[in-house]
Image 1 (cartoon, rainbow, N blue to C red):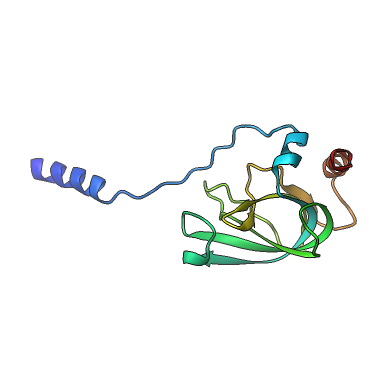
Image 2: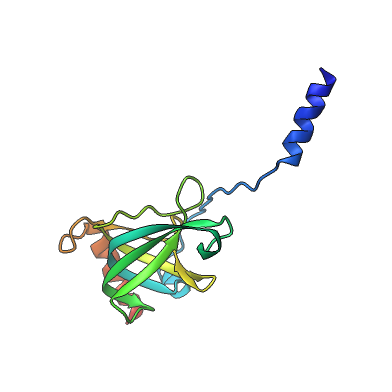
Length: 148
């Protein structure tokens, strides 16, 4: 019995693995968020790919790369398309975008690539580009006031 307990203890400590968890405190006021964020845009998610290994822009070795058609840029983007990386969810702060839906995205540079997560102000804007949620419309007005 003692050998079994010893084996369990040794195995537990010998095979330790990093565990990642997402912890968001609270959002900053919108003015602070705009100043601190590298990219802000309204865009439609047009596709995604799962990436693993060195291509992944994350310590954990995996991520999801989402492709967006930019409908309106508020900060940091001069092209009509952008690629943004995020985690896969399940505790790594990844934002789960749905291809075809439109989002208001707040992204930051992480290891040289635009990235975002659930702790940012990123949110679903709507399922149709011409029908935005009221909450997003008012936030867009706030963004435009700060950027002037």
